[in-house]
Image (cartoon, rainbow, N blue to C red):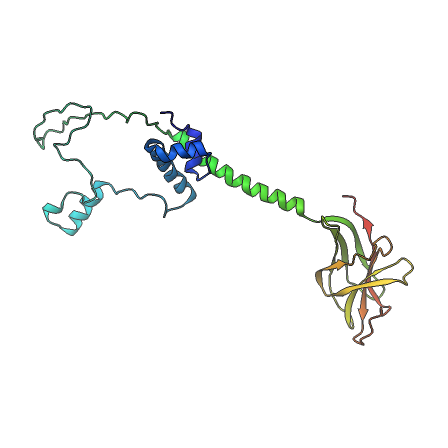
Length: 267
């Protein structure tokens, strides 16, 4: 039977989807399924999944120390978690070697080397590291793709201007116009303070200083305003911040705090 190649085994251990043929073989083949399970434990450990990763039994010496510390009966000395085979157990494919009870004073024992199971591939540490690296690179690629999509969808700067204080005021500011993929414009304005008698209002004004559009109220800090589709920035390039009295009159007060003229962005 042709088993799955190491690359496909790695993808399965990383929970990546396989093609129909590979998945069908994995569902039928205990050998490949065992290799996927073994490699998946390494992946879980690399991801920090202590719940999904299988637990290893402690060394027999741990139970021996517990037994001695608690002063348990000698009948409880064998490690309860040990899977050590009985002395009469034989290994398939190997002859039975007759042995006698070992003398405590004689350290010599008979060691029988076990042959690897036929058809099973051995995963080296280099292969396991490579598999874990694939998982790390897969996650990094996903993050990079998300960042690229975010960068591509970021609105473009189409115009900007520094806002200079007019006589009697000391505030500083700036204005930037962004356009999204649909062409909708947004004015982002930053003002250092709002030390005015009333409240500050943002305007787009024509060069003749007669025609203007109000965008809204602004305070200290950064604020954003949607530019109406009917407003052509080429015809209304001046950004003005006015000091408006609380008199209910929607007309410009004639007192400007900051002003600047938008110019097309070089980018």
